[in-house]
Image (tube, rainbow, N blue to C red):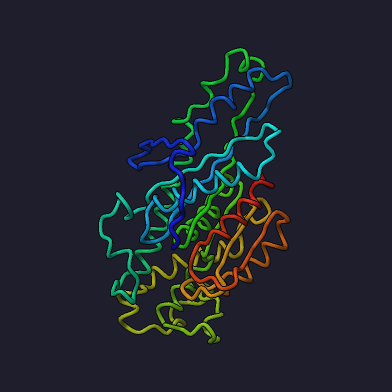
Length: 329
């Protein structure tokens, strides 16, 4: 994936150790003066909103990739916003995923079946679900480290006894990170304001079955919703059943995918999703029907399939996302 250029001096960076995870927060120095400005408010305040983008990197990468994207997002949002009005600040948050960056234990476990990792499917999905839990931990405890309530006076608190500092959580992820985005939003919809999955997939069962069986993208088998199939209907070889795709794994994964397919909170979560038309690693066709349903359910949603783009995140994808984002925050 493309390395994005950025100026590290353009926005502040603060690192917290949250539950043993190094969590990097950008542009948080804008929060204190914004919160303090409410102390002089002449109108009743029930809610003080801030916007937080959590950036989830791709398989085999690290937070340095999403850090670069985060700086670009902050810069573009500042340029595109109407600076004449006081708007809720935007901060970005990055961290290394499990078994990546400074948290790497065994890099080989991030490889796929073609690279010889026989447990690729289990390794990838267990990592995804672990990252979902890590993100939940960070979202739960980052407000304690930011401690924004400390910037409000006792007079404000007495006057607005039921005020709430509202974190509008926007979850953005790339490739593996996009898989995390879909699953986090499905597990914790009440914590999510908007999502930005890039070259991700809502149906990991079908993605992995097609990858394991080496089904051609043009074949009828590729368009099957494999999470609706019983294990014996997969027609796997004995070795595939024993090591690469066990029955218990299929039952667990297909249950997750069925929930995303049938119960995702499309009506309440805004989405800007990006796909590459030439993506053969995570093809858009696996998510297209689900995306069409999203478009028909949520008027604030936009889905773009970028011509000539493979499994990648491009400057155009980020630029289009920030154009959409400033309309939502």
